Image: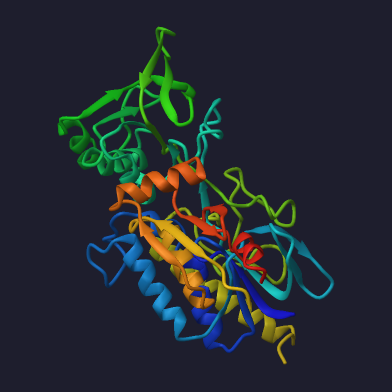
Length: 306
Length: 79
């Protein structure tokens, strides 16, 4: 049995790990996506101490810091979190079980899917959710970006220089992103912005070959030939494995107090998965530290430490 | 211990690819890496082998693993 299991290896989880390691807790991190959403960011300029650093480079710095503590890390996804008599049981999606006296949930958020026919079938065969990861593979193809918010326009911005033509498809009647991003896509010579359109289907043969749109006003449909579809319509907290153990708010986030405690003793949460309004790397890191301190406090006060 | 033939198709801008390579290095597993963003021939090869264009693709003794999956990698290596 470990003192503490941290679920999630993003900035919240990794900061919690550093704090817990420095308290000499018997610690395990479980998580496959090292760096979490940070690794997907092309550029970060608001993490204190680092100007204009790429997400991947920032994550590398986090990892280097962790290396100095020799922390056990299982590169797996968590399938279930259960309460036991002595603490908690964490079961990975491939069935391995780990136990701990306390748990910090720092599982972040997962990109939302469109939920249209063809989407799931073509993941990896033209449908993508991360431009930083996959944009280079769509060189000189026509691509569609679904989502006219910051995430969508950020994605489109990366594709403009790589793809042949970039369609930006937005559900509402206006792009909802920061002015700088809107200007960038409007001024590029190879973009077409389609507003008030709903994606009905993603089609293709072996790979994606087109996307079918419906104009929400006229109800006319249009098929655009594209070799790639990037989905950027927001994200949801990654909480499927918690199933009822702890209360979620109406956005499916884990409710925490200012000390990152949930209503379940011994269970803490940090980062984007929580009810904290600001979803930012540095806020997640701060919460990771707080959650680890709260977990340590809990273990000491309940005489669960040897 | 039997020798395994491990190949990793990756791109330099893919965080999962970095995690995969770090994980293999940590476990002391020797592999051949191909940067599919730079090498069009290897990109074609990866798409043909895996039927898709997502990275990373890890091939262990002919077994195709799409995405960074420690459990599958360990199973393929008999760990």
